[in-house]
Length: 216
Image (cartoon, rainbow, N blue to C red; front, top):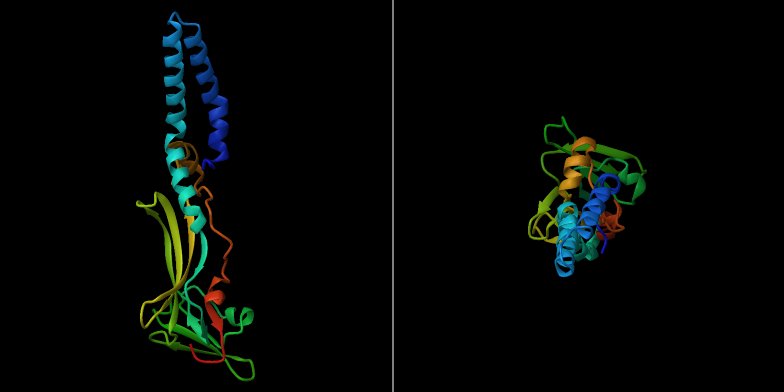
């Protein structure tokens, strides 16, 4: 099982914590305890020495081992569409993929929908709408801790706006940091410990919403 802990925390444990553990072990071995008492003391101490810095890391890593097989793209239903609504998209989508239109929003647009359509002569025509015309939408859920799973989850999904049916989703999982990383690493340097994200990138949209000649 992979332990999800930062390299800096491991270095700190090796430089500062390991010598202390070895010193206490040496003191137990050299003590006047009986043989049986020494064995028990060593076992109890080793268990505590591991649990103090790595107990929560182990629990979180076990949770990651359970969810990681589900990371990546899940396609429940493919549909052929002419375009879709994606709040984070841009005109560039029409250059990269053979859709007929794309809809998105932009800060400062007063929550109006920007509709960009490809004309017959391959020019793009831009207009604004009050609500999306597309039937399908990309939904984004930012990183959040799922207490039932014991991990941090990011979920991007493709939904039918008329029925709320989920056609597919991309799941990314990150571990919940152990206390050592929270105190010594993330507090000062920020970021997150990389988890399991699967292979699907932005193209997961086109794998669910397949470009078509008909209106989507």
